[in-house]
Image (cartoon, rainbow, N blue to C red; front, side, top):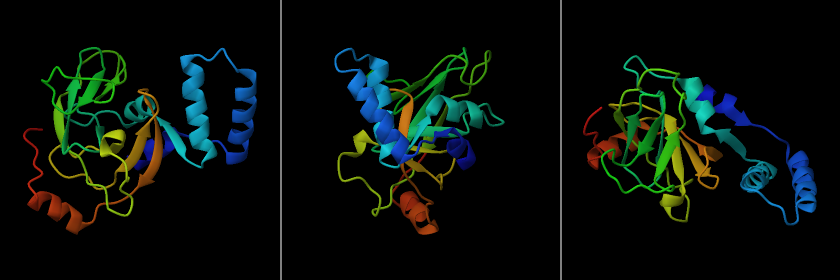
Length: 198
């Protein structure tokens, strides 16, 4: 599934990004749209050498497993588990708790209609969110960060990505990728990180 993320990454050289950003800002001194703001944030990330991914493309490319659950999952970095709530129109959402009504743009990732096909409902599921090793753990609040990983619906995933969301969109900036060690997985289990259902 790492290839799905890498294939969805949008590449732009630092030099091209810096030139584009400079000319873009010059041209749009006052008439900025929401799209312009997203574009500038994405270009800034690219000019810093980061990759930008479109989560819808990642999810569409990875597809569903044999039980019709997404092969990839995304969760806020401060969650221990994430739930996927599939919808009949081929969409779905990743949330902390499926049956909670307390959602905001910062606590849900809503995938658009048809992400997983035009018809049929993806299956619900719950996955354990992998820990972030201390050497790459952000210093600011983990609620500002997201973890994208291959969904092991009944086990602890091992090859996640650390992401930052661009202004509530489905665009995310990749900051790191790592593999969990056997010791980290064992410690997560020992600390009581459990999946209630899957």
